[in-house]
Image (cartoon, one colour):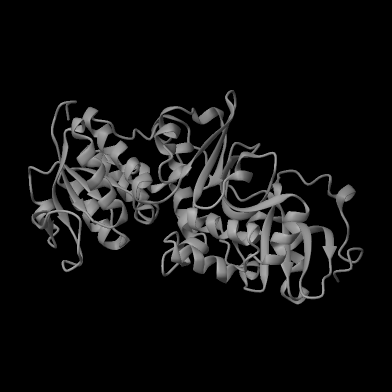
Length: 418
């Protein structure tokens, strides 16, 4: 596409983001992009656009040769898969915000882009308005990138903010998030960490060239965070955040996980509150750089979609430089994590899974311990995901070398745990 070529858009979905995009495009005539057709699911719903735009037939977009850009903004990942793959096969450029679709079908979608030589852009799929994917793709060299970590789910961050600052229990905070539209009526994708691990999967391919699958990564959400955990954090001047992290280990491989973590006051993520997202990139020479912005909502997400549409004017496509032009590293779970674990009953804690336990505090209603555990043991077990147990990472959780454990070690007997 040349810079001046008219972009004729077929839009799937006219929800919060779809309508936001429609409004933004009306305010940016210089873009030379117009929506020709919009596919919707429920025709009887009142919408703020002329009725002649709307149809329920996907083929009215997919088979229309005058439409050269398909924008997919629907919730249903299965239907989205059909739309996106069909459009790519027909040589249409595609813009999507569907992180579940992209993360679960990454390998297939990469192959289709290559086979049909068409752009597939999805900046809006990770961290809303923050331009993180193109920055990773264009700016950071793989060899120097040390870590990418951050808060990439606004719903869970909103809930944690309410638990922390308003002393609400998890259920109350979740209800508030739903009432304000920050969490879905079925919030499991958010609160179980599934949305965040989908986004981490996408970040990994642009940061390190690693093509993975969400099911292979270590993750949990905030479903078991207790008000008592927030009180312990407050005593230590920590915040609790759901952190998606990929970090280079000394052996060159990558540690990658999504887990709740204690965050200290001297870090950028400490003050990222409510529905905002924040991402810290650490690289060899530029040190730490911090990206902050709204991770959800009509206009913030639509602005990222608009950025992708705009990039199509000059034939932009992801080159997947780290994957195609570097020696690609791989994910490793051969490292240790320092964790805080709170529980109702010590019987539910797999004490034998720990390398050592440093602290143990018994309480009347709830107790906790601080210990070190191998990442592989967490990945291959789920005792720590039981409703009665809350696991939160320490502020600097990754330990690669445990030679010093004999100095640090307090045996289970000394800790009074056994």
